[in-house]
Length: 321
Image 1: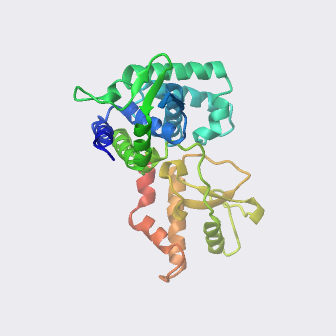
Image 2: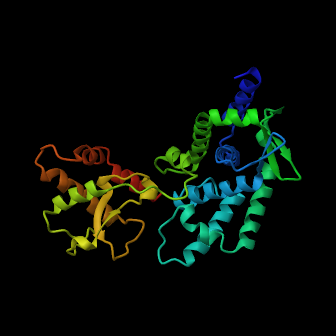
Image 3: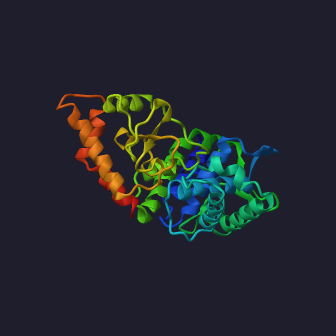
């Protein structure tokens, strides 16, 4: 890497590291730029790389939908994009039979069904980021940085091929730094667990399914063949069984067997558990621990960790603010 490109990389690190904890648009802007370049959402014209701001704000909309509406995080509720995603989420939830939060990819077809309204939302967001971010991203302590050029006619950012290659080669380091700085802001407003992990996955369209067969088989053995619904106590046939999270998965953002219970897949339950549900879960976990009379058993460390560190109470307390 030549001196010029080393300086360019250094400027990116400088502007990201210098982000104030109250300027989250900069974090989303930087993340969206890098991801657009990695996904080849650009045009090459006369050896210059043109990234339309339209594609950048589309990604920003997805980030904030996931962070605010799926993960339940907030940054103060004062940003234009937060108001837009809140409005879209309210419209989306009104036509659903459940209030379970979903990732952007699940709701995307609904969000884009009214193309005129969708373009209007993106227009508001485009104006907001142009007024507040596009130029400010290029400044650090009154010093002008040269991360990209702005083409007002094409509403695009312009990069050289050398700059593109530098960003590709260092994408992980730059994105890790952006996620860290962004997470610091969320920690000011939220008690939610795994904030850094949630911010790092703000770009997800849909979640990856995890094979939970081992969890299900373990809980079958716990019931000794007499499987019942965790919430109602009603007997269940194997064909009726569903594994559910008591404390919502989008909040904990992990699959933990101590938080998993067997329910009836044909019934709906509240997304947010009440105190009775929490006490029942703690009692269930203690019964599992005691069932083995101090003998080692599968997932012992998971259950013991939850019990020793009072994870259920901790998460429930922070979930209810």
